Image 1 (cartoon, rainbow, N blue to C red):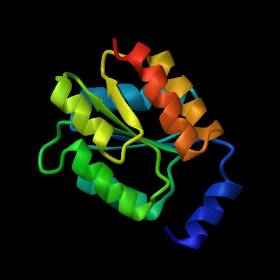
Image 2 (tube, rainbow, N blue to C red; image 1 turned 180 degrees about the vertical axis):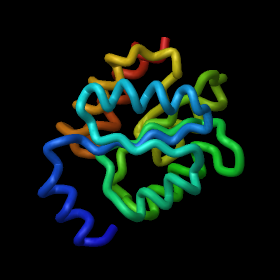
Image 3 (tube, helix red, strand yellow; image 1 turned 120 degrees about the horizontal axis):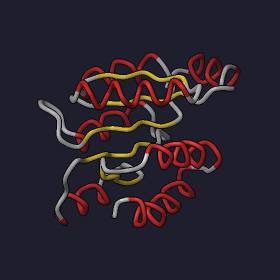
Image 4 (cartoon, rainbow, N blue to C red; image 1 turned 60 degrees about the vertical axis):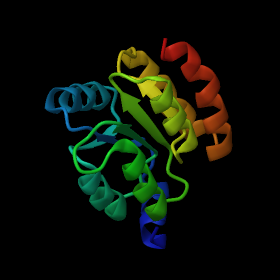
Length: 151
């Protein structure tokens, strides 16, 4: 990540910067509306390729990325985003997941996975913790906390 981008982010980070990556138009818009009302800086995009473009331009405090997308799924998108920003905190979201999907998410470079049946207030807590904790602490917290959230 470019030094100038990091400096700009940390001087203007009074508002958390969030990237939502999902090919579902309605879900993207719901996330955008909710997070914007909570006064977060939100960028939405519909594909992994778009997410890569945005990540090259700006640093995000957390990325919420859909698992099942055309062209590039959430695992591949996470891998590419981590090449740009190794410290990126990424949560892979899915509308449905079997045990193999959960294992794949846990093996990936993402901090964790989240079923899309979550409560919107859970998102606010995840964002808060992503800012408070370093990457290792956040991943541990997310793995322990999401067991309750994903049920």
